[in-house]
Amino acid sequence: MTTLYFIRHGDISVLKKNIYYGSSDFELSAGGIIQAEKIRDYFRDKAVDFIYSSPLKRAYETAQIAFNRCSSKIVTSNGIGERDFGIWEGLTYGELKEKYPEQCQMWEKDWQDYCIEGGESYSQFYVRVKNFLDQLTLKCIDKAAAIISHSGVICVSIAYLLGMSAGDVYRFKVNRGSISRIKIDENGFGYLDLCNFIP
Image 1: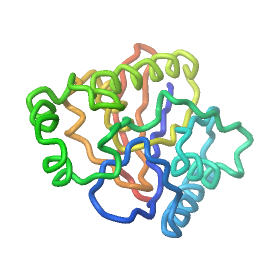
Image 2 (image 1 turned 90 degrees about the horizontal axis):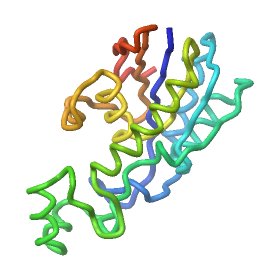
Image 3 (image 1 turned 45 degrees about the vertical axis):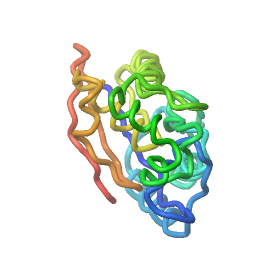
Image 4 (image 1 turned 180 degrees about the horizontal axis):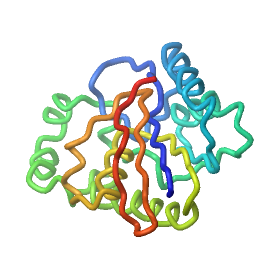
């Protein structure tokens, strides 16, 4: 049985709420550090063979704190970095509609394939995460791996590993500092037995 733990990074400090901040590189807040410490306590008695982290500070800092007692090395991968929102980074949806009305309209009509200027489309993002997962599941057969990442990455991962469609990502919610777990049996069948758990 393969066990995959998906951990969303802890809280961050941002200047304004509800902004798009996929590739923006924020550090953990004081509250985020406490969340990471609680994740560390959760994994105190659990074996983890592999640890993968997004290279973005908020995820990597979470990984460093949560697994500082683990002998496994933390490996960073761009495959599990959050979606890049390009020129939309740091803006709220209201600001987007005001500053880029035509682009917002195109995005609303084709949210999966419209590519934000300087960023990536949802389809590109989905394939990137899927490719990471395909390699990971081959490497981690009958092992346990922790993936410290972001909301978008985790929702895509859950939907993909459960055999759902790309559009089903919005059926899941993962809060900062939460843990979700998927187990995959010898037939490649994945099931979710823990979702959005806050330790």
